[in-house]
Amino acid sequence: MKYYELATLFLPMGSAPRALEGVPAFAAEGRGRLLGMWMVDIGRLNRMLVLRGFDDAESLLAERRRTHESTSPFGCGEVLADLSLDSYEPFPFMKPVRPGRYGGVYEFRTYPFRIGGGYPQTVAKWQEALPARGDFSDCLIAMRALDGSPRFVNIWPYADIAARGKARADAVAAGVWPPKGGPDWLKSEMESLIAIPAAGSPLA
Image (cartoon, rainbow, N blue to C red; front, side, top):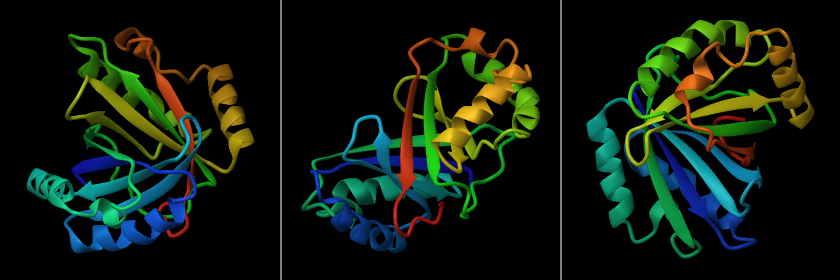
């Protein structure tokens, strides 16, 4: 996959089952590939995250238009309180996201780049450090935003919350994480949320 879209569906309390019915069918009718669906568990609640992958920019843009013009975006327009769509490009060295069973919880971390060199420097630092970090837990994808403020999202699957804490602590203790010099190229306004794979998610 050369491009990704991460959609955030803002849902009224109790409407998640209805959204879960609509998303797969809506995705199947358009371009791209549905990769994952999650419900936010730690962070702002009543949000559903939907990750889709695209082979080219044309398909990404065509799907964006289809979503904006749809009378029922993601097949659940009657329950959608709001919708946010963000486009991403993977770091050049990252492998494409493949559906599979990777863990019971996923952490989505968003880091803002420093202006002036933040992206290329971060890519270099992460490419060097991720193999060793992978000895503790794997990064599903690191991808930079193509719209909005300069930033990137990195997604990490874990068996559970305890496994997340242990992997992060052990990687820091071993001196392999964070990437040496990597934080120098990032702003401090970072965000993290924990989400649980939804029923029927290709990524689980």
